[in-house]
Amino acid sequence: MDIKFKEDYDLVDKFIRGDEESGRTLYADVFEFLKKFIYKYTNNDVFTDEDRDDILQNTLERSILILCDYNGSSRFSTWIIGISKNIIKEKLREINRISEKEVLNEDKIDFTDIIDLYNQDPLNIIIAKEKIESYQKAFEQLPGDYKTIIKLRNHNGVSRSDVSKIMDRSVDAVDKLYFRAIKKLRENFIKIY
Amino acid sequence: MISLEKAIGDYTDLINEKKTVDLKNFENNLSKEDYKEFITLIEIIQMGKSLKTTIEFDEIFNQLNEYKGKIYNAEQASNFRKSGNLKDKDIEEKINKIFDKELNDNNEI
Image (cartoon, rainbow over all chains, first blue to last red):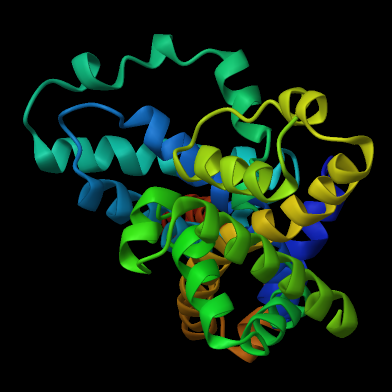
């Protein structure tokens, strides 16, 4: 048997034999890609957000169930996309609201769409364990008001005008506080990481 | 020219609203020194944004890993490649059945 994607094959092999880190690497690489694919394929009125979550969960579980079938002849991401397509069709039959052809419209998804999904969004990558631990430590070391503003602006995505109302400060004051907080967070992070 | 504080605030609003970020705009509106610092600071902002994705992934992966543990016990895991995959097993079973049938037919003769 020709193992074309040896790196993926080896990761699967190690993961099945009990190496958790290999599994983490394997699934971290496909997680966002898979989510984007499911969203793109089910972005219509038929599927709800809950359905999409179910599809993601079922795809991942099914992949575990048949993991020993992965033979390295395709990329792991391509293999898992194949599973996902079947799960979407199964879900559709379950929902049974309108005909399969109308909803999936497979012809609409062309190769360039799939390639586009491979481009990682720098804001949604899976960060390495050590890096995330360092970030969390650096964050914990910040003074209270710095933590609050980073939580609001950065982690929870609140606009500067809403933060100015919440914190009862001018927009300029919010910008200045946020800037100092980010600067301090970076300093802390560099010391730790 | 804009201040570095405002640039960081603008950048954060853009990514919070999931709008496209054109770094060239920031480069044109900041001094050379400020732009250099801006680039280093947005790295930490991006990391903070990825935190949510990473935490979500970790939760899901922990469940998956547990599920994997239930499916592949230690003995199976060490022999899974040797014993072949599920499709091979199915084929093997089918062949065995055919042979069994043939053998029975022969016995009858």
